[in-house]
Length: 437
Image (tube, rainbow, N blue to C red):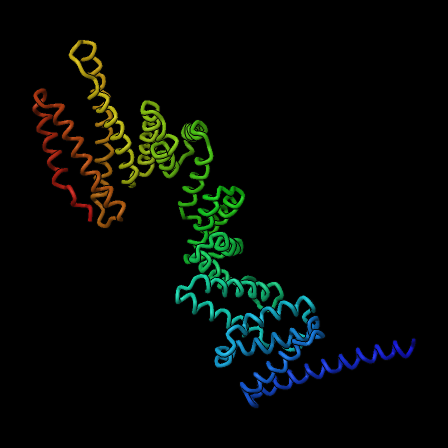
């Protein structure tokens, strides 16, 4: 029995010795290649010896075998000529590195070898990703950069780098995922950038993407998290408040939004921006638009009030004045339509017509007041944004309509007013299209 046992141990020892010798052959070829003795050919010799070694089942769970593959294939990946011959060398080297670290988590031998080949894996994968990125091959670029990001995490978590986070690899991974229409993956990479509180104007769009992505997903936990990070990173961006408002109103009953608005209004805690948000809600919300006309008119009045308050708080905001004017104009149109439907000549009907005229007149006066304020503010500006030019152009058309109405109302009853309103309508008519460009 003892002889059988000794023989068995001797066979293992001989097998191990052969494997060690094979390792030595690979390492010798690597050393010669690094010294310039034989160059590329010696590196290929090392690959040939290594491939033979890896074909042996005894090497499958040997950490040194995978370490050597990391070093040899990684070095090939960093060699321009050989990388072209072996285009997947960087990916295979990375897979070998992961396997090595599973078998030897303490990375003892890797440290002894001074991380040979590891940097070449990273730079090769990154360069391949950039090449695909420039060619707009988004799927292919993403497949490279997601590996680069994984390797970047390995560098930071294992302290192979002084950097705490590989921002660049995550940025490229996120952008290529987004362009490849992989929104979930893009949000994951962008999310890590936001969680590491990376700032700078180039990164503001990433926070915007995250907040809108989780708003559209109705993922309240993630929306709240990234909204807070966005506000912290870019506190001057007013979009965050708009998105927060949208999130609140989209998930609330109309009555709850009205109650919150009235509470804030009474407490005088609402800003001009808040009033603009509420005004937009009261006039454009899908649920409100689906209400019957009489009920919808109630919210149009609330919109007018909200926009008016916004304009009062921010007198230089011609857009707020315009919105107030448009809200009143909507009420004017509704009242005019109601008046047109009242037909007849009886005293009772004439009384109803007179009352309807008063409502339309009041709405027209309100609309003129705010549209002219908007016109005065925006027309006096030396330079205007596209939105401001559009608003200014529309203001002149609406004011023309309103003064035509006022002129016709005074026809035959008040010559002075008629002439005044006629002059105003001609003035705004002369400005039609002037501000559109």
